Image 1 (tube, helix red, strand yellow):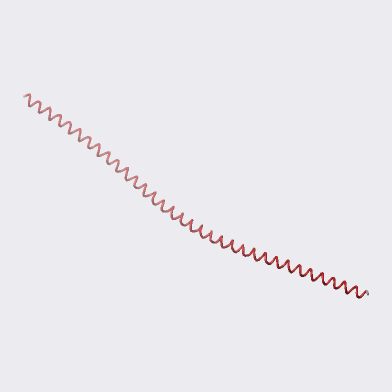
Image 2 (tube, rainbow, N blue to C red):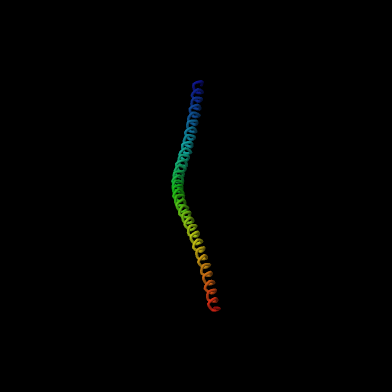
Length: 122
């Protein structure tokens, strides 16, 4: 009887141990599955990050090129503004010269008319 009871307990213990092993295996399988899913998500995130990094690099390069072009255009604009100011000053000088000539012409006309009147009076 005692031997039979010990065998029964041994069988129960073995059954419990097998059940624990089965549960442990199931938990390990579930953990492995979650790890695979997490690895896939991490790989997807790495690919997304690589794409975003490449896009950012391209955008930074485009911005740098645009900044260089803007500086060049700004320099050209400033040069054109300086040339325009020089042209305006030249036009103002020419207008002043024309005004002087007009005044000289008016003075000559006045003297001519005065001379003609003096001749006519004589």
